[in-house]
Amino acid sequence: MRKTADFNAAIDAGKIEDAERWLEYIRANREKFPQYDDVWFADRQSDLDLAKKINKKNK
Image 1 (cartoon, rainbow, N blue to C red):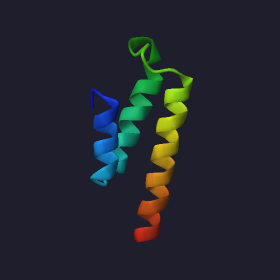
Image 2: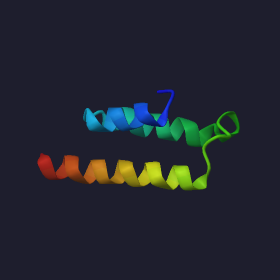
Image 3: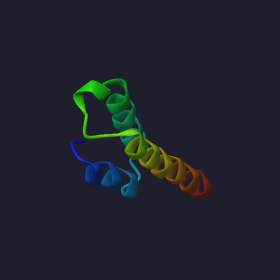
């Protein structure tokens, strides 16, 4: 995934694990991604947590 929109599309498509791996990769390699600040990480984590909650509820 190259963009936040790709992250959101993965979540929308139910590819939560892919989105989670991408977020963890970005977090582990923050020096390569200076465009993403703490607020961005918090927002994406919230998106991911909500998607997990909804996914769990639908199972």
